[in-house]
Amino acid sequence: MTTDTPAPDDQDHGHGTRTGVIIVVVAVLLGLILLAKGYGSGQSEISAPGQSPSKTAVVVSTTTTLVGNPPASVKVKVVNATNVQGLATKTRDRLQAGGYTQVNVGDSPKPQERTTVYYVAGSQADGQAVVKVLGLNADQALQMPEPPPAELAGATVLVMAGLDLS
Image (cartoon, rainbow, N blue to C red):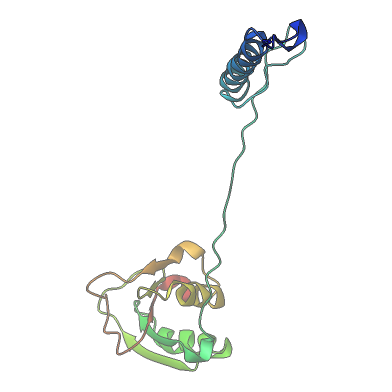
């Protein structure tokens, strides 16, 4: 009987497996180092000699566009908050020229110099549209306080007409 002895080229002695494991370990360690150093700061480490790396700020801005209802479907109440006779009617006429057909008028016992346009919750775009038709500043449209400064009678927008509309 003969015993098969492997040829010297067929003997592994574990050198190939050991070399493969070492290569994998080194690659993993190198990858971890690159991830920690190269990507951890979020900026490039390369710069011209004598210059420090520059930082760039990224500003993200969003704009929200409110979509209002057609003017003819918006219920508006105009209240004269001055001593100027007929200011509520004059303001109603301006709104009707802008397409607002559901406009009621009234008087306020509390005079004010600057016009304020109040809108109920969910009607901000309608309030801003009324401000625009009247040629007022955007900051004159405010959410309706509780209690409202005047009887709404179903209106979703309340114009407290001040002296700036007279």
